[in-house]
Length: 172
Length: 322
Image 1 (cartoon, rainbow over the protein chains, first blue to last red):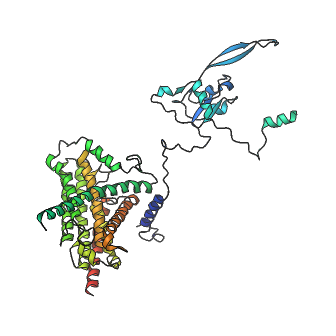
Image 2 (cartoon, each protein chain N blue to C red):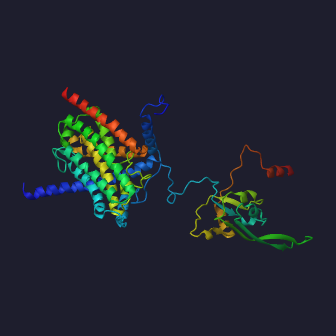
Image 3 (cartoon, rainbow over the protein chains, first blue to last red):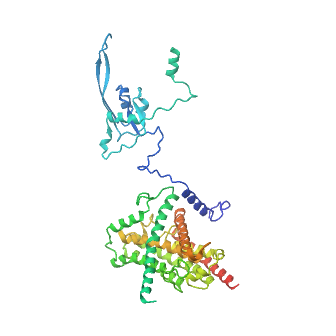
C-alpha cells in the first residue's frame, strides 16, 4: 500500500480514471481531418520559402549563411550604360536561384539575413513529391509561392514609428 | 396447429438468433471503435462507409476473408483449425436462451436456463486451451495457460453470484428471474452484480483482465499464430462475448425487459438498451484501466470476489428466509 493512504480513499483513483475518460469523450476530438478539411494554420507558419526575384541582388548572403547549404545561386555581371554618367555601371543578374527542400531545415536564417527582403515565409505546405530529387525548386517555382505570402502584420499603434518614417519626416 | 407453422416458428426464431449473433457484436465493435477513440481524444474510423466509418468492421471482415490462412508447421492442424469455431459456438448457444422480452420472446426458453448458460460458457476454456496447445508456439502456450488459470478461477465467483440471484428468484429460468425481479433487488444484489460483472469481464479476457492476450508481453497470447478468417472468429467471439455477458448482467441483475414504462410492448427495447449500456461500461473500463498482473488477477479473484460472492449468498439467504 502507498504511504500517503491518508489522502486517498480506496477506489478513488479508479473512479477518477473513469471520470477522465468520460470527460475526454464528451469533449470534441483534437483530430485534424486534413485532406478533407484544410488545417487552420497561423499566418506566419513556416511552410515554404518564397522568392521575390526582383529584390535579389545575388549577394550570396543567404547561400553562405544557410546551415545546410541548400541554396544554389548562379549569377553574372552585366554592364549598364547610363547616358550622361561618367562611367558604365555594373549590375548582378540572377541566373539561377534554387532551394533544395530535401536539405532545408526551415530555420529561416536565409530570410532573416537577406538585406533586400527577397525571401519570405509562405504558409503553403502541400509540395510533397514522390522523388526526393524533385524537391529542388528553381526560382520560377519559388516565385510562384510569393502569391501565398500573407501581408506583413500591421504596425503596432503603440510602438515606435519605423526608422524610415522618422527620417522621412525630418527631411520634410 | 399443423406441422408447418411449428417448423416456420423454429426457423424464424433461429434466424432471429443468427441475425442477433451477426449484428449485435458488430454494433458493439463499432461502439468500441468510436467510444475508445473519443475517450482518447481521437475520432476513430471515419472513411469506411462514408458516414463516420460505420462500415469499418464490415471492411475488416472482408479484409480478413481475403487473407492467407497460415497453419504453423509445428501446429496440430486439426485442433488448430477447430479451436476458433469452438470459441464461437458456446456464445451462439447462450444467445438462444437469453430472453429479450416478456411472454416467451426468447429463441428457446429453458427451465434451467441459468445452469445451461453457465455450463456452456465453461466450454470456452477448452477452445482457448486447444488454440494455445495446438499452435506450437511458446507465446500461445503461455497465453493459453494464463487464460486457463484465469477462466477456471473466475468461473467460481461467476457461478456463486449467479446462484445468489437464482436463490433470490427461486428459479433457474432466465425469464423467471426477470419476472421475479424487483427494483429494490438492485441494492440487495449489488455485491452480486459487481462480482458477476467483474468475473464476466475476466471471462471475456478483456482489459483490465487481458493478461492472457497481453500484446506487450505475449504477442497476442493464444491467438498469436492465427491469421485470416480464423483470427476474425476469435475476435468475433470476443465481441459476442461482450454481448452475452452484458445481456446476462441485464437479465440477472438489471431487470431485463422491465423498464420505467411500457414493459409489455417495449420490453425488447429495454433489454437491448440495458445490454448496450453494460457493453458501454465494458468498453469504458478497457479505456480507463491498465492491465492487471497475473498474480494480481488471481489475488483479486480468490481474496476479493470469492469471499464477496459467498457473503452475498449469506445475505441473500438471510433476506430470503426472513
